[in-house]
Length: 434
Image (cartoon, rainbow, N blue to C red):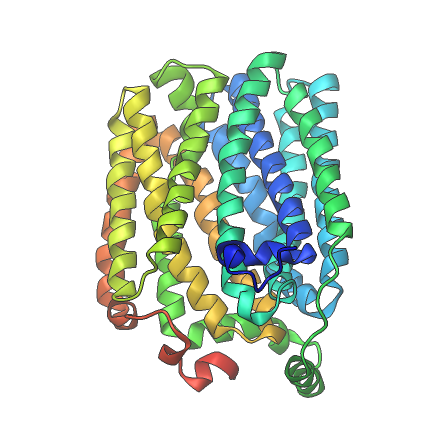
């Protein structure tokens, strides 16, 4: 019988722990459901409105709840049972899919009702993101945590590839979004059932002591809720890396406009949209495997800056492309480049954050990610409405390159970042949040 100590399982040791297996299955299926759903929503909204700005509102609707709730969501992740919160969030995603299915049946031309449901999706995401990140360190022993992180990133990317592809094919096969939403409901139920099987490991004596001290010194207040912001603000290396990624993707994101590219520029259908949505995920997944085998050992700051520059360059290439093949290659490379910056940012946060604050710090990180993704979709839709689809994407890529130059000048700590190790972090950065 194979055990965690068996050398044959060295690369897969996290999967010897049932808690991690259940967590991974639940997260995989919920990401598949959400990615399928996003393809169907994008195509459906553009079919109804034929307006780029309407696609921007899709992102804005999902961004608004995390923007309002992220502080409370992060604090909830530090105060309450994380497994139960995760179950409620995954069940909420399923309810949203049911509502989208009902809208498609009963009010298929009501784009405003779709936006309302997307706001509810944003509410679920406000809580699920910090909770899922904060619970992960309690699913495997500390010595297997790095392996769990690697596989967690890889399975997320596989789900990001499979979801859009399945969603696009299902949309075309069922000749509408109803089949996609029905599958998303079923997949969400699987995620909830898998989450039931998660039983987090007991906190170590050191973690319990730290949590008790924190609870005794800092009752629930505006100060404790804002602790995640203070923590990131004090650690300029983390602030620089998070904000660089945020502004680069905010300006360079073209995902919201993919339905327009698929239909009007590349002249393909929902299946083509599914391929376009999957291409960045394929690039990211392969890059994650490369980095797992060849870790970023030196010059991490400059590596991140270079990766974001590659992201901006191939965003421009995608913007001017009229070939489906070239567009897929460009999106593939933007996903690969973005994965490098994601890995560096996630590593910095994991190394720097004490367990009793993981919910709040991850909630702030979620806000930055939401700004870059959902608000970036709104920015893309708005600029496309003003200047046209192709100019909007090209200008966004140019803006990304400008952000890189500015951040390289503003954040000396980011330029000088070398090894991604705890040794690079000062004691205040690791444990003292003011």
